[in-house]
Image 1 (cartoon, rainbow, N blue to C red):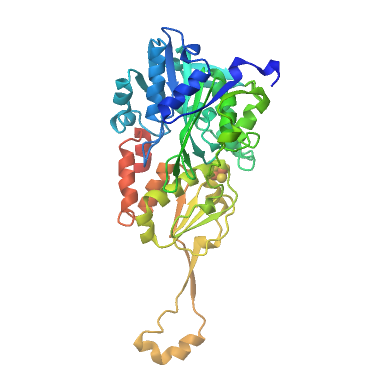
Image 2: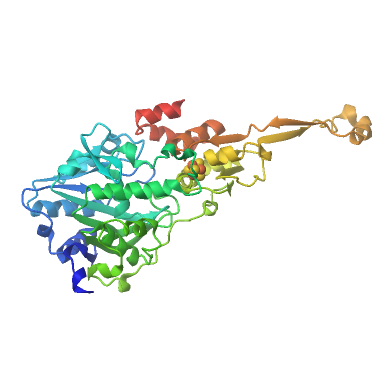
Length: 467
Ligand code: SF4
């Protein structure tokens, strides 16, 4: 490492320990201790990530959070706040009422804030985009990111850069299509491009003072909602530092992944993050080479998700549909196994120009591209032969005559199709339509989950799915 790169901001510690508390403490000590990050009387905002409460929610490791809050208090912090925006469509109160986070975090001596639309915010401009960010984040003295590392369907790993996104107001969290319809939104994968740009714009507004990638426990294989096939590994490691890109690059390195091939970190290198190669990072603590882990990533082809009785047929699709279909198909596979056994057969078509399904029965057409490009396809019509009376006794004598006649063919619209519109479709809309299509009797498990989701969805979304 040359002298020029020996910059305190680019210090990254790899810490190891027998439990999460010890590991985070080790990591911060290697960076000079918590008092290097906090002055007495300061307000600290710990940005966690709040996932949907469905299935088996994983937000952050409470042991890690407990220790971090305790360290902040020991260093003389006046106030410690833990918070985030929640995932899209989720009502804020659910994190208190269902998961009991508020009580738990307050018992640790910190405040808990889940942001909603009426939160006080400031507007900041980055690269021509106007972004609303809560005042509470802008005004805090120090901002810490606590990020639980899992595999991620788009960015391989749930990096801290990704975590920063839920600092902004909900309507800006979504990568909007805006006026892109006429342009080739699809072929340029504008969805992913917009998502990355928005992520990096948000980061530039309020940079964190401390970043922790917690991979003491690591969810691999399917992650991040702990679907059926996820695997929890005890890795005993954390990566801690000040520069978010440096921490994410080292985390990828530990997981044997090339940061130059990761679309998020490779794009971040072109922004003002101060890091462009591994040489720019000053590593301390555990040796990266000796601690490398071969993580099992999520599937990159939807056809590889083994949903029973379901034939997944893909055309060309972009990241938007991939992300939503990944969630929907894994949900079916995890929570609706019993229902799928009753369904017997279905085809799931996604993307532009998907091939014809083998069967016309139960054809699910996912997303606007699949719907619009399959309007004139064969599976949309069914042909009915009218010559069906051969087995009735009164016609047996006329059997030859009937056989000689050409059967009358009648073409009808195939009613056994479920269209799930959207660019991309919304998970809750899809689930609600799926249950309406098959009926509650066929989908008891799906209906149970939908009723449960309704207890924590925002009113706007509830109205949409009740239509
Ligand atoms: S419908 Fe799906 S595949 Fe098509 S542009 Fe929208 S998100 Fe992408």
